[in-house]
Amino acid sequence: MRGLLASFKYAIAGIWRAFKQERNLKIHALAIVVVVVLGLCLHIERFEWLVLLLTIALVVGLELLNTAVEALVDLVTEEYRHFAAIAKNVAAGAVLFCAFVAVIIGLVIFIPH
Image (cartoon, rainbow, N blue to C red):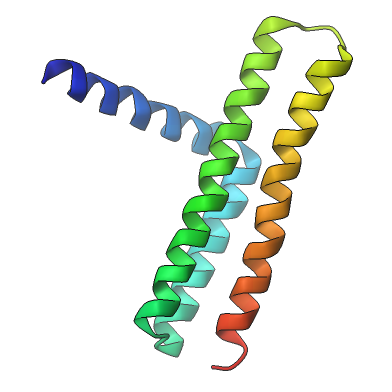
């Protein structure tokens, strides 16, 4: 049981560290606040909340993975390496793609209201 609790502690510490030090996660956090307030004000449906929550989880989860990829690549090499750049750029691209789709999902949900 102690091992399980320790793993939760380390995971929460990782999330907290990323939110404190990563600018893009702060931007995502602000967007989450705006979306939640807008959803509450517009009284969106339960299914719409579920879609928004999954979208938020996907974008934030990918941002956390992107942070981990960048840290790992930086650990392996400090100098420019072609494959290191590919790893960082593709991870960042995954976040950008999902964030773009998240905006579209937000528009589809909020515009009719």
